[in-house]
Image (cartoon, rainbow over all chains, first blue to last red; front, side, top):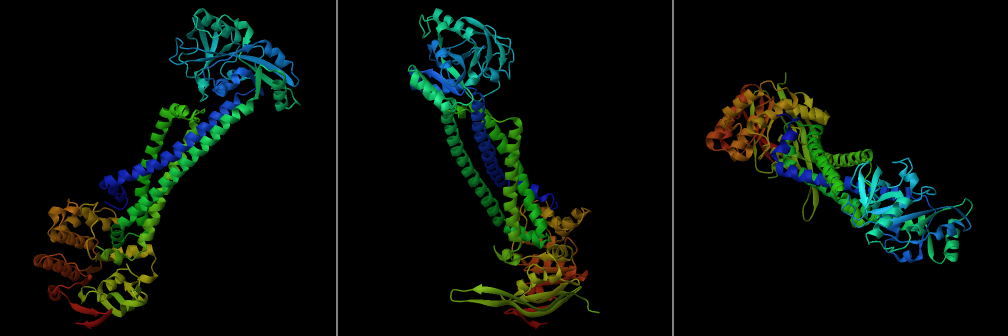
Length: 399
Length: 229
């Protein structure tokens, strides 16, 4: 047994103390890693949401204005629907400052053959669409044929497999990347496909449209404002002159979500930072107190000829072993928790939640590891150096 | 030629002490000069608080004098840095500290081996450690942990540890404090043998029996050596 083997031996012989310290370090790294991942996931969710907003203005039926989930239906693909006369599309297109318009269609299924949850079906007009297709094009670059659907990442079924909606068999032609929103549970198709689905629902007697012609309705009109025109002026113009619809700026719509995310990020960030600081303080106090408890042991090592540097080396090595074990445990548990409860966190917060890429996760894990590897050993080394300067004779006289 | 291996010259150790009514300096050791020669066992006696342990700790380099100088094996301790002083303490000085000083995470034999292995390779120290434990009558406890030993057994382990590196100087602070008469004599005999082998041994003790083993006796009172015989 020499000084190099002493740290591992000390940890082994004091298993209870070692486990306690490992848990404390794990808590610290859990806070650092978990907090970073949760806050970043929220911010990624917002970025993903904003990236899909190709339209400057979204026009919805005025009756939908009071719909509680309007924003989440329009932006996040939460199951829901509303309709208005398709003549609105041309009327909106005719307003001053409007460059392009494209209708969208929503249909919520009750339970599809593939899914255990309600699915939002979003229909787009391939001829005019400029907001959804560019996003879908990242996964599927060809035209959407009749009964072709592009599925959100959570929809069961690989590309090529069949899926049944209201008696209409559709083919999954592609699956989208994860968005961290309800869009992961939505499917996208052409307006013609969606109208077939509406007819299917009418045949089954479960359509809200009763006998209305699916060819004469739209859910929203996506508007692109021409260069040189002010978006809010166009919004005001539509709202003033078209009584049956309500126009809203896309950014204004996301600003609510953005505010919620910013608020949630701040609260969660502050919470995690507080817990992080608390865990770090507890860790430093624990290592310092442990050092003080071991002052006699350190004094004996000094008597036997250990230099201050060697003594610090023993203590730092112990701390490094404990910190490495704790940091690893904390990161693994946090990663598992975020992976397992990401959906629950998203549901609980009601905000888009997109877990970062592996590379970014690795950076956070490294950060958590480094923080944990610095806090404990630094506290221990400081404590050991301080104790090694105390009158050794005095320590040895203390019983 | 001076055969002194330890030279203490005009050494004072001053502490700042606060009492309820006042705060003042006091000299735990005051202008003490002494020396230890190879091969002699010197007994340091005196009442509690007379400065014996402080003097011993200054010779060990554990406490630095406020004034004066201490030299061990030709090295003036105040001139050494921490690494040099620690190495000198390990290689040249064997210390039996006051009180219980076992490392509780190590077995008895590992406690004895540790100082040797701090600066040297593991070249048969196990046998030497067991031999020392045998001389002190606790070789059967070699694989036990200190928590399983009595106070007297711990004291003997501490003495074995001090002898493990074949030191030139042995400083023992109350080495027989927890021992019965038989073991007291055994320990004093071992220290005497170490002196006979060429080490300089300084023993702080209240033990009357130590006098018959000592080559010299130094008596301290109020921080000063008041009698030498």
